[in-house]
Image (cartoon, rainbow, N blue to C red; front, side, top):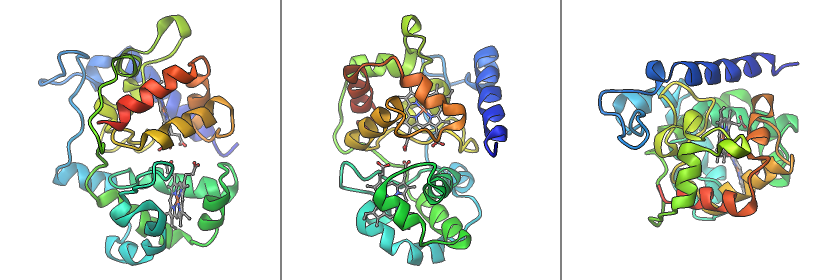
Length: 232
Ligand code: HEC
Ligand code: HEC
């Protein structure tokens, strides 16, 4: 029940995107391949908008424990621990709330999330969001993954990922924190979480949209997409 607002928002966002790509996705310097707005770059304005209103300085102190696993400034070096640097503050906070509520399950994170209160959560989320956006460790080119990401697969009814996650997986707009940054994330984590969605081991996206999207994709498809994204 508490997800009704989210459900409506996600479908509304999708309807707007599909019905009026010109309103949302086109811009003067559109990418020639996709006709879409270029990837969101870090600048004062985009960083400010994704950072939200938490206290970054106290977030920096409170995040020390998290950084033990997620890396200094959220730049994780463990392929199964997601990078948090430059992720939207509201997305980070939502995941923590989902771990707290048991809507998303992971033994370590359920325990970690239980230790922080609302104010700490706002500060920590803003601190990680404020960092320069995550970036791939090694450049990779995976044409199959790129194609699936940018064009989807009509015969498998897969909507192209770029519609929601933006060019290069860098986010759709500076304000739309519903769709996480994926470009530059670890391949290992991306693949694990995509398989979790497909198996319904993770089902916390609005209206289970991610579960539906990856349902018909094979292991090889998911691996190709994860590899493409991790290099961006
Ligand atoms: C002991 C290691 C460890 C610690 C400490 C830890 N995490 Fe995590 N975190 C993980 C792992 C592993 C995952 C991936 C879980 C999964 O696969 O679902 C994760 C996932 C997350 C995610 C989901 C990210 C995404 O892209 O969906 C967020 C947000 C997060 N952690 C925030 C935090 C915060 C904030 C703290 C500190 C309060 C923290 N973590 C402490 C290991 C840790
Ligand atoms: C209609 C919009 C939409 C489309 C299209 C879409 N996604 Fe998502 N995706 C979402 C939403 C919403 C979430 C956030 C889930 C949450 O709140 O936990 C998400 C989350 C994710 C995550 C989890 C990120 C993390 O840090 O844990 C991955 C990975 C992902 N999507 C990959 C993809 C891929 C790959 C495709 C294309 C095959 C795709 N998405 C298409 C809406 C979409």
